[in-house]
Image 1 (cartoon, one colour):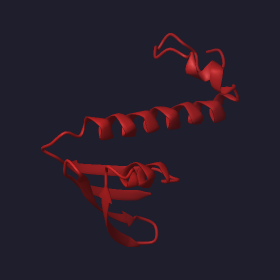
Image 2 (cartoon, rainbow, N blue to C red; image 1 turned 120 degrees about the vertical axis):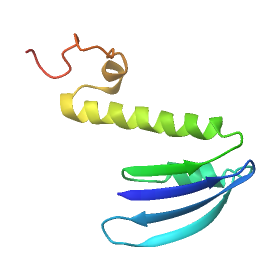
Image 3 (cartoon, rainbow, N blue to C red; image 1 turned 90 degrees about the vertical axis):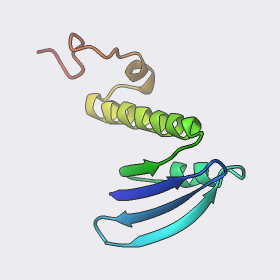
Length: 103
């Protein structure tokens, strides 16, 4: 799993990360206007924990991360229930809905 620290600025962000299994670390400056920051987060292939420090306009970043989390949860339920994506999207968040079989 990646643990990512992000120092968020209006036009760019400085990220540093560690891969918890291998211990590999790296640091990078990501520019927002060029799409570099969005590409960085979209290319992540596994789970990641993101810690963020920000005092500026970061709403777009939070929305992007939230959308990715929502998609990951839907894909998890697709695998668990063996249902196609359109059926998973319609599942309501309720304790009354049986997501896996009948109880």
